[in-house]
Amino acid sequence: MTSVLRFDDVSLHRGTTQILSHVDWHVDEGQHWVLVGPNGAGKTTISRIAAARLFPSAGAVDILGERLGRVDVAELRPRIGLASAALAGRVLGGETALSVVLSASYGSIGVWREEYDDFDVERARALLTALDAGHLAERTWANLSSGERKRIELARALMPDPELLILDEPASGLDLAGREQLLAALAEILAAPGAPSMLLVTHHLEEIPVGFTHGLALRGGRTVAAGPLDAVLTGEVVTATFGLPLEITKDRGRYTARGA
Ligand SMILES: Nc1ncnc2c1ncn2[C@@H]1O[C@H](COP(=O)(O)OP(=O)(O)O)[C@@H](O)[C@H]1O
Ligand SMILES: [Mg+2]
Image 1 (cartoon, rainbow, N blue to C red):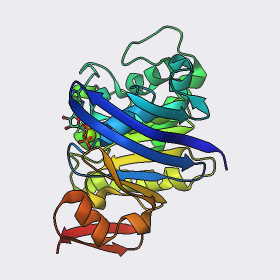
Image 2: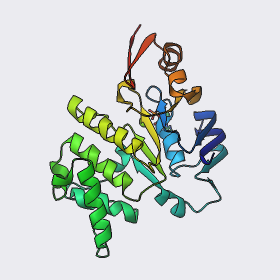
Image 3: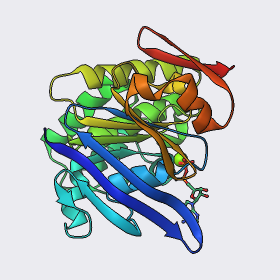
Image 4: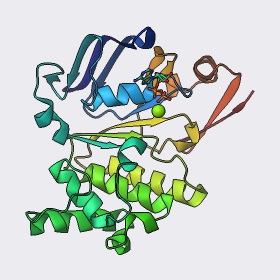
């Protein structure tokens, strides 16, 4: 099997703060992983390392067959789609939805360039349409709801046709309808032939779309459990991960957690 990600004994500290401790993690082609854990567990930190945006303090990281630290990240990053609140926060209010998506293929946010070609414009429009946001193409970012913005962020992450798609809390802040629409769209992307390997960060089990195969549970920068999703999302593991007695139920591919 081809390796998508390989973390070997990865640690990260800032000053005296240990953010990640001795994380071992292997993602193979055909797997789709969920990173779960409470606030501050290190999920965003791991996803930024996996997206070649951040370097660990110790350990080795291979991304899409390239060793972080040896590869030119400017060549690696376009192979990885990333959607996160931090990126979305950098979009300017006057930017149109179409240009937010289009500019992804040039690695910038919201800078309109003359050299966008028709092929790119068509692809951006097709992605927006596929995410039920085609009618929003000319609308400015400031005038979009959070659910609409999340779908546009997803279209942007898909624009470079990435081999690896990383979504950091894609459903946070959405209302129920917005969340369900987004999860349905993600399940559809994941089920399509040639889908990218997906990595989804969340602290709500209700926000895991159908079709994810594996899970990494984190607490305090350490791995609590990693492996097939059903083996990770057990009452025992989730209780240890969140530090509170929890019960998990699964129904038609979706998970729910509640206090035990
Ligand atoms: N640059 C930084 N300097 C110091 N602490 C940081 C830095 N970045 C993250 N942290 C801390 O590392 C921990 C993990 O952060 P993060 O990866 O964002 O967690 P999560 O996404 O699981 O909520 C948090 O306690 C956070 O405050
Ligand atoms: Mg986070």
